[in-house]
Image: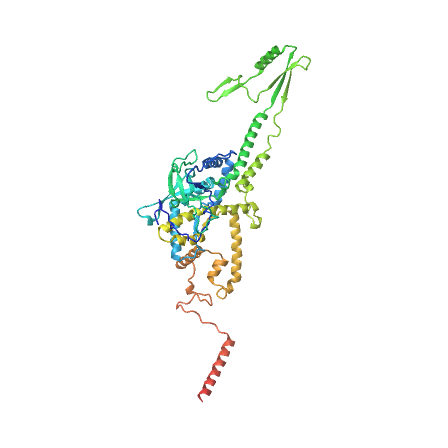
Length: 552
């Protein structure tokens, strides 16, 4: 089971013969079905958006270098991945997992080992950013072929432009001549789907192609040897995986064009230009033009400072868009005249730039209020939180949920290789394993503070009923919302503080009086009600009388 290169982890035939479907399984991750002969992964884009996925990757990476787009990406990544000095950016949560404490402990240890292989504490920001921009993330799971039970030895990052996930449909045995309508569904020869990765060490400029059933130029890797995580956005028309930046392609191009046009307009309209009306009298056309040129060369100065040589030279032969206008005027006019053409009047308007900036941020899912650099943060009540910030928090949560699939894949391989769980057990366990990311959002902190106050209020209300209608474990999990790992950690901290003397020892406290026990360690006497004591004496006397009558 355990050799990842060439062999699969799963059983070869784990599906009962009675379970049949004409639809092949699909992970909905953008991978296409390809026939064994012919061409795959190549098409011509009529609209001119992109031809191959590599072209699309290059566009995404160029977009990430634009300042406004980079600022929005950094806002998203900083919200999703919080770098703290003391806490780790991600922790595993096993509260919903129905397994023994020993299995949970081993799972936590293997998860910590996987994080060490990734160096996630230091490189979490770069890893998440690369995944967000590319829309794909690939890691090669390197194992020891001689000792596969040792688990994953190394995780090597692979550039997304060098990998392609292929789902190839094999030819049926009868060359596809049978029809599902004429056959029984149970006896129908369903085509097999072969899943593998194609790795090209040098990123190709041309699409992957095959001809005549020959293997593509590259290295074929098995499905289980690669850990991959996608954005979940798929172009259904072309069957390719998209990045989260895909929605921002048009707004970013519009913003860039508007800014370029604004610069050109300001350079051309900012300075004042003069109009010279030259009186040429009744000169013929040729002589009039010659006379106009002589006047222009006489009065026009164009001295240019050369920063390379430090010289000032005359560049009259070059024309620019800031030139004055020279117009001839016939006899009978007002003679030679010089007027001034004013510069642009609305050069300070930036409303169109601000509009497209907001449009870019909306396309990326970032609140528009974060565009302003001088925008402060008002720490008020949670009821004052903007709706955009709530949407942004949910968007970041979806990103985290999608990104955590990478850890699920790595953890699955590690646990199966070390014989901690079986592939069948993982199918039922994997859905209940969750990942807790570190939060650093002020809105989230404010919300958490108010929720804690509400929980403590509920705890004070329910405290008299603990031990009668509610158990302590139920209160800690349902009322205080403490997870299993938090309960273990808190209990360990309490025991440690009792040993250090920070907290009093519960065994040395009288539960009735709440005071420390005396040196002998005996609990105090239970106080008795005088009425109850008198009633008890009467009862004892009556019992003695009844005993005497019985003897007689």
